[in-house]
Each structure stands twice: as C-alpha cells, then as structure tokens.
Length: 175
Image (cartoon, rainbow, N blue to C red; front, side, top):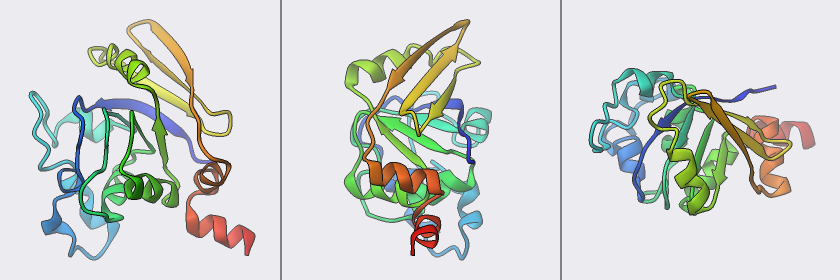
C-alpha cells in the first residue's frame, strides 16, 4: 500500500494557482516524468527556491486557502506525483484541483485555518514531517521533538479513490 507522508514543504500563501505549480509552457511535454524539473518553477515566495533541497525531498505540501486555483488541468497534481509528493494539506482547494488529486491517488486534505496555522508553527523545524493515515483519517505532524495529531474529513468515495491508487486502479478493481 502507498505510504502517505514524509518531509514537509511549507508554502505560506493563499491562492497558489496551477500556473505556479506547473507553468503552462510545459503542458506540451509528452510524459508526466518530463514535468518533474519544473515543479513550482513560477512560485514567488520570500526565501523559496523551487530547485532547493526542501522542494526535492518534500512528500507533503502544507499551504493556505484556495490551493490549486486557476486553470483546470491534471498536470498540476501530476507534477506533484512525479516528484514524490503524496499529499497537499490546505484550508481549501479549487474544486477541480482537489478532485484531480484524488483521481491520481493522492490526498488533498482540508483543515481549518486554525489547524493550518498550528501546522505552520513547525515550518522552522528542519525535521518537520507529516504521516498520514488516509483510512483512519488522521495525520500526525512532528518536528523539533514535538508532535500533534489531527483528524480530517474525506468522503467515502474520495477515500476509496486515494486508497486504490487513483481513479484508474479503482475502476479496474470495481468494473
């Protein structure tokens, strides 16, 4: 079974759009793997380096509200997938981006603004990591010698998609 979680990339801004996740000029690439080097290339945040070690080692992204807004395209979740990111945690998601995450077998977890604010207190910890139990609908963040666990909601169908590995694997098992 797919493991969800690992080192965290904190992106402290709302309204991160799909053009910042994967610039439109790369949408002509032939394979998902071809998208890999361009992850978050156009995202401008103080101190953020899209080619940096934190981006390369991240397995979870934590952000603010309205993540994945803008143009609707599967390429945005795909670039996360090929870079080993298994989950994005935010206050809210653009509807199509969120569903594309589930369809690709990745977790899109919505938490309250207060809970997200609490997760961001770990941003300064070099060892910040999140483990996610999709079936149990909990996540645990750890770093700097402390940890905390939070529950999250996900619809039964979306949970089934994520646990199956995405829409294609789910359909293969059901039909």
